[in-house]
Image (cartoon, rainbow, N blue to C red; front, side, top):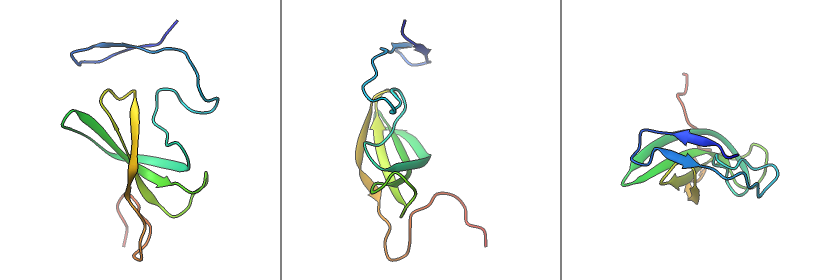
Length: 101
C-alpha cells in the first residue's frame, strides 16, 4: 500500500512507491548526496521550481565550515541537488538567522 498526499495543485494526488534504495536515506525528503545538512531555509517558488537553501558542510557528516547548499524541485517530492550556492570565505562561515549584538 502506497502513501497518498493531497494538495491544492492542479494534480491533487501523488502516489508514492514503497521502494527503498538506501537504508538510512529518507525517500521523500531532500538530503544531499554527501556531507552534513541542517536548517533548511530560504525556500521559494520561481519559474516553475521550488528552491531550497540549507546550511551545509560537504566534507564530513559532522558540523564544519558552513556553506549554503541549494536544491530545486518541480513537485516537492523529487529533488535535484545543485552546486553549492555560497562558500565560506575570508570573512567567515555562512550562517542563517539574526545576530545579537
